[in-house]
Image (cartoon, rainbow, N blue to C red):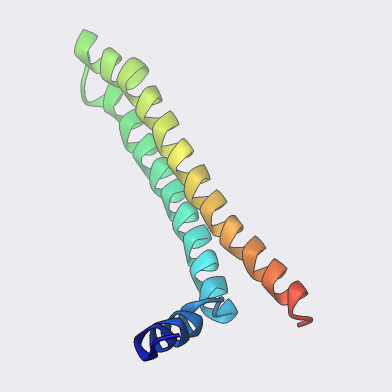
Length: 102
């Protein structure tokens, strides 16, 4: 094996694996961010539903009754996707720790 190839393999080996503590931190942060999306969605919902008291007419009803529900659904889906991403990271940490006997 050439000297360059051995050095490349050593560098590659140094980068394989998981820093379980760091990945666990990121997984928890992702779950926290998902909760922030949930909270933000609730705040937006409150604002949107306050509009009928200050805005009336067909455009207002369309905005509140048709536009917002679609966007609310998208935000909820985004929160669930981020929550799932965080859970996946945490699951991988658990599997890594189980495999290494920790």
